Length: 375
Image (cartoon, rainbow, N blue to C red):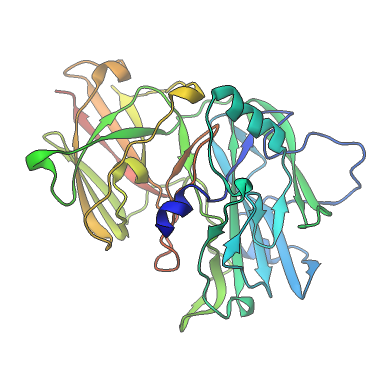
């Protein structure tokens, strides 16, 4: 029951729609001059930023993955903390660690009301819960918050205290540069003889763009000890990205006779491929560019596995909808997967998905690309 509650009460990503951005404040002449959020690429870059004291002995350092990205892509905001013990209960959807990202709830609410959908968030009086180990205040922690670029244009993102005092800001730009977007695949419910543990069926979609969700309740330890495990990262190590640039050697995909075999060194959790993977496709070497879906037509499909333990190998039978890709039999189809351990969000709106807590630390992971002939 707790897991199900978290799925509808998690923290929401920031959405960039252009000048009047959801999750972003447009230019405001009345806002005083404050520090600029810098672009950072490695842990050392973030550590070199001037710390900001926010009270209670807590220091933060802020950074951002990039200030410019194509429409339908996304980036991460970073908040590195010292002296902060995360709470177990989070009652706000705009937090990144001990501070908040300023945004307009009016725009997001209007979008949802127009669609005729009611989506539960922590703003409805429900609280997200994530049990935190003791001693985290002695650790250096990294909190993440995603920004989705939905509409072309420039906007500002602001970091503020919980009392809405400005701390830092950054101007972002969503461009119309070419981008190969990520789309979900639909998990087909298995019945009868097919309803076996770890046996899944999925079909490709022709529309609907999505991006990984990164659970804001769960920080990443840079330095310190958690449950007796000592963590100390190298300053030169690359910071997490919302979508990795390069395939991970720990996530391998192959296709044979209509079966996609996924092998993961980190492990794949129980929620099924419809919840955990995004796809992108090629037809005869050309990227397939999906269209956005109207909000009212968006849905999720997925299935729960039969074990709580993550698996390191998963097989998915592909029921190809070639028409959705504009393909035909005999065409060469390319497929790449993005493993989203915390689930995914529609680029414009959606629900949050639960993490596995402190058991693992699996960030979005990119597979190899595999080609096969359409049958």
